[in-house]
Length: 212
Image (cartoon, rainbow, N blue to C red; front, side, top):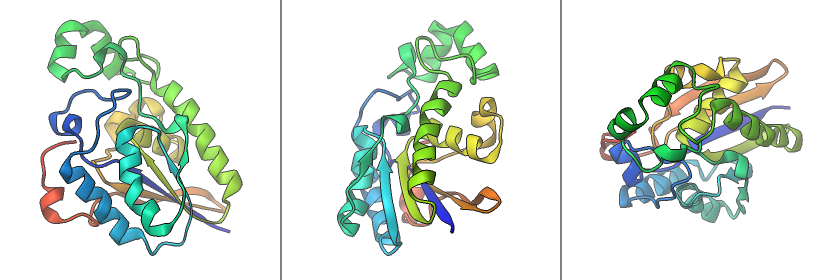
């Protein structure tokens, strides 16, 4: 039995374009973000999906909607897939945070596993809640294809946990651009990375847009 886990980051938002911190802040997708979601659905609707797990945020549910509509699968909403809570950094730019939260920012850059954004979550806390969803998926679906629609930090932290990478290095070792999909294969040897951050399902003009 083999489980194929697909980790899809949501499409473009105004915050991903501008690079501001956006965790519990809840923007919708931009028009380009909606186009990215539709492009993913068009490319992946023929996959025999067993389940689709989605973060409850507006941007992730909007990204999941086209593939759910195309396949007739109801999304399974999980709080554990939400983005990192950036606390007092929410809805602010990196420059603002550097100016107003300099000490916490340096600590977070140095060791984000245990040092949170001011008033926010550590990477360890995100890993803890996200790992419960991963355990649920592995238990319910030991065989098949499962899609997870989540967020930049959360996906990178999940990948670190599955691949045995120090969670404190999630920002240094792995990237997850908007609308990118990474694929993990689970077999008798455990999780193995098959695809990292692929975006060939979206048109070139969308791939070339500015943003994270």
